[in-house]
Amino acid sequence: MPDTDPIIKLVDICKSYQMGETTQHVLQGVSLSIYPGEYVCIMGPSGCGKSTLLNVLGCLDQPTSGDYFLGGLNVAHLEDDDLSAARNKNLGFIFQSYNLIQQLSVIENIAVPMYYGGAKDSEMIETGTRLATQVGLEHRLNHKPNELSGGQQQRVAIARALSNSPLVILADEATGNLDSKSGKEILDLFDDLNQQGKTLVFVTHDERMVQRCTRIIRLRDGVIEHDQAGAKADRLRGKVIGEHYGLAA
Image (cartoon, rainbow, N blue to C red; front, side, top):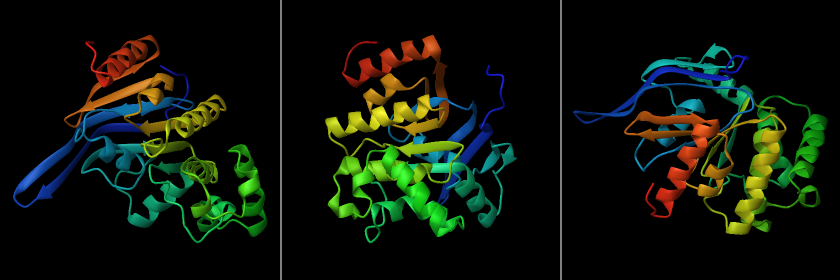
């Protein structure tokens, strides 16, 4: 157990949806803690609750019951405006489809979270340029998304996720739309960020990401089936990769 307090702490989180007369229980009593500097992959079969869990972690959806502490603040039942403020302050997002604004340049897309946070123009330019350089796009500052490759667009999305200095970076299938070469480059960039102390929490089916993460959380039917780090994660990693390639595990 780390000596520091967790950045994220879920306590008995449940999430259900009402579909007519039927109640669908998507998350059932999920409890976990994520600590600074962890590189966590959330996995599981389709329909197991991965995306719902990520939405709860990302303050995009609220749990039906349970408590969620983000940076020490219980955000589980905040009003919308307060939840949005907690999200913008503490979290950075990376999406499979990049979610860039097509009319904006690279540096403008990077600065969007800062703009909504009330940053000055000079700060947005300085930080946007620094982050674009960090992800290898210093020569593309004024390009629009449609002038970039998929890998370059995802680099913009990563820089945007970093722009508000978040406690945690969350990603949903961040390499899902990329070819092998671009995917590897993005994974290398994630490794660099984690080595710099960034906390990463990703939903993924990409076995290459599973090979790199330091902790694997596996969901099944809305509950945590496995939560392993260190040597135990190595064993689970082998099982997951074996299943991916249809091998006995």
